[in-house]
Length: 217
Length: 248
Image (tube, rainbow over the protein chains, first blue to last red):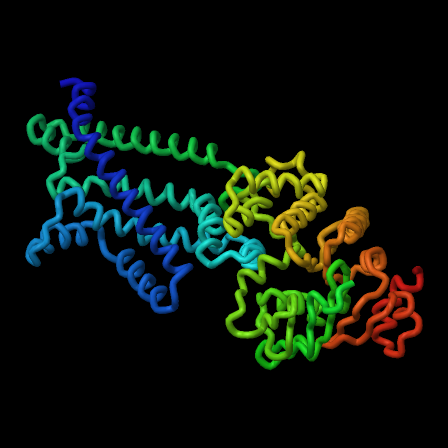
């Protein structure tokens, strides 16, 4: 079995790795945005609730939360499919981290612009949607890239709930061929290739939405 | 000139905790008129402007806008704000939007105009201020004077009853300050009602015959700058206007 054959075999798992990474990143992005929006627009009580939520979810290990969702919830009569369990653990934890990234990015929005929007007669919701959100997303790019990369690197946990992603394929291969070094080296290359692809996509997105004078700090 | 003022302020008091910022201000502004309020830093000039559209809540007193008491409960604050155009000291353009979007955003989102209509109206205002050629630029690509013009176009696009300027020249060099004065005079000739807060004596002299002098939250004097500089009884007034007043 050549190195190319190993890569070819691992490729079977790439689809699942991409699927898990994408599903968890989208879950994280959406929940992070909801938390950021809720903090901006909600009252003191909801802000406190969201703060507690992010505090807890940032503190729980991904694997522990994944096991709680996948192996624990059925005890309460709730079953989650493997991908859903990944979204509810890795995805929500990423969301809690992204909410913190967004909090910092929102603080970078110029107070003068927000005052100008208020003075023009916009509601709190309109100010968030038309002024704060578009600026926040641009300021948050470096933090978001970090978080999506983290999600990619945590995606191997999916094998523990039975998703045959890249790492799982590798383990099966090692079990039958005993060529651990080459195989895990190949796994590393596969993850690096996915990471590069992600970066190329983000750079394209950045350039597409680039605004003169507005670079993330 | 109409019989009743567009804006009528009586005994306006604003306190921030223990600190009294405005201490019984009276002011009338008639449609088509331009008034200049001057005074040292911290005299309450900006707070006065912000009371007009309830960005700051007055503690007591009366503000009538088109005859309606806008400090009364139940006032439609958002409607009020839409009829008062605000031009800020640092211009406060939305930096993620082009010049055209800065001017048309309010028309689209607050007036509910369709994009094409809003942009047409926005372009008219930009053209009026000789900024139509910069429609696709972002704020970071503009000079201070250009940003100022866009900020004014943004305010005018909403067809406000009055445009208020908060220190319009403090972020500009002297040449641009004179251009702003010329611009304000032109708008005045076109019938725009304006209230301008500044400590720029050159600007004040160029745009108004009389100024209102605000000190420690009160209107201390109202007269021409030349008379305030030479003849006013209060030495603080003479000192404030004296710097450039003698040259006038």
